[in-house]
Length: 80
Image 1 (cartoon, helix red, strand yellow):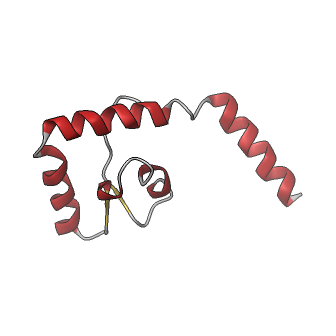
Image 2: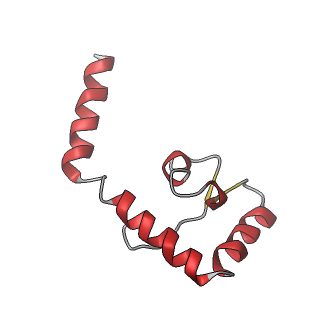
Image 3: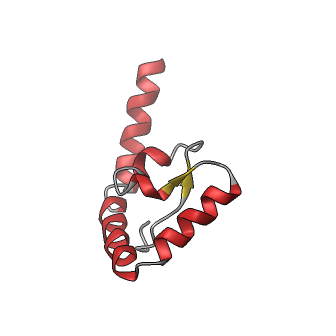
């Protein structure tokens, strides 16, 4: 996402909730046919792909090393 490439992810992975903020159409079921369909959908309109890529890049900037450390510390405190 930080490279500006919209990812196709399955609804069985943790990143699906982040990708859904960009577009729910980027989320596929684990079935090969659905994943292929999503790739075709993404690549059939280059303007849409570019727009989604810019949104991905913007969203990815929120995930800094510092924020990851802070989030981990908060989560760890909650369980200890």
